[in-house]
Image (cartoon, rainbow, N blue to C red; front, side):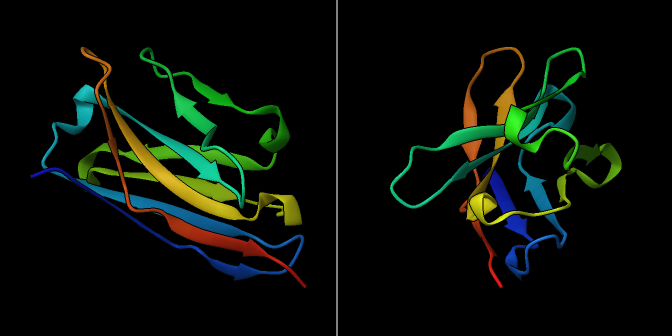
Amino acid sequence: QVRLVESGGGLVQPGGSLKLSCATSGIIFSSYTINWYRQGPGNLRDLVAEFTEDGRKIYVDSVKGRFTISKDNAANTGYLEMNSLKSEDTATYYCNARDIATGYNYWGQGTQVTVSS
């Protein structure tokens, strides 16, 4: 059974930081890219950051220089480090595991990030 479990969300003041984790099980970690999406109130689920098949990191313009995507292959875990958070970063953040060979996607349940003073 495939499981993606996000953690690390919460309430933070503008300018603050959070680090999200995505613990995976049931997949061959090296066969997947681990990516991050978010969905704000009334919005569609949008890409935040992703790994390409050749290991490059891609960020949406609004988070470039503030967010960092990473992974720990030994721990089967992906991460999204978020710095200089803004109110517009408020959203539910979802971990995505994409099969490199087939493009099939698995999703986590989401973790809420609220940026507010």
